[in-house]
Image (cartoon, rainbow, N blue to C red; front, side, top):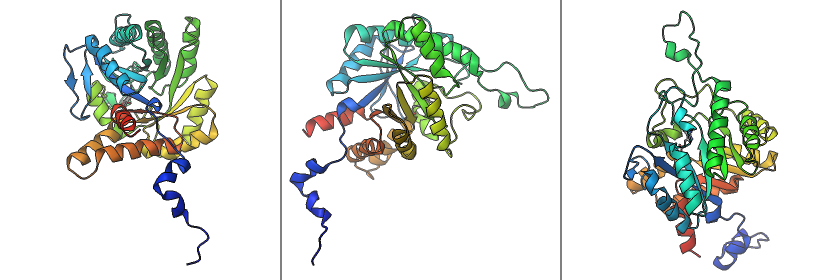
Length: 335
Ligand code: PBG
């Protein structure tokens, strides 16, 4: 055959590295860490094999484990000792995240990102205090309740400032409240924390892939769902609008969540904006690969690596993932 074009020439072993378009580094990854104020021992999270809730006393050791793999950043989620309707344990000085952040900042070199949301702190499990009006003549009152956006902003400001004060490098508001980035930026700057960055969960979808996380963080809504604030999975243009609003409000990093089912959105945001783009490879995306691997249907190491590579290829600069440590260790071993 007289073929001019033979793409296979560039697939031979020694040349593959030279023509590779995308690479994955341990420093691209952020490892989520669950800090649980209700336990003295590590508690395995059943739906997320390999992950545990760790007590505050053990969080430095946990973060050291992450750092050893070459991953330099952690994202902290907290399980407080008690919950109430307004989620007040989210911003107290002796709160679980404030405590954990102080310890990590004092004793490690980790870059600390904190989740800024109320769903783990409210007794009803929604991402902010509920509006206090009930619609007249509706039999199911719960169905009419929704999160009070503007009251939530005040809480988010307090939370972000308390995290910054404890030593957080970056805060990541995940509640999809309108105006949350501007509110937090203004509050941080007003408190002298202008160096603390904001990763906005700019486009966060109302996704069934968060199931295992809600077990892990004990943050499932007690009634209803999060459709009133998280985005409809059917919408992509709306994501661009959401992201643009967060850019205008001063977001430093733009996050899309979940990742794998929303790679089109990651790509669009990459094209449309100059900011670093983050993607959150969520708990359900982790759990499903583990479940299939447990059955012997998939090779876990391979599919984990391929998933993260695909998220980078789509345009993410950084990836929050429960695979962070495993993949980083694997990358280091293949050097
Ligand atoms: C909310 C929050 C959620 C996740 C991260 N932050 C859950 C939700 O919106 O219900 C999910 C992460 C995951 O599934 O891995 N603070």
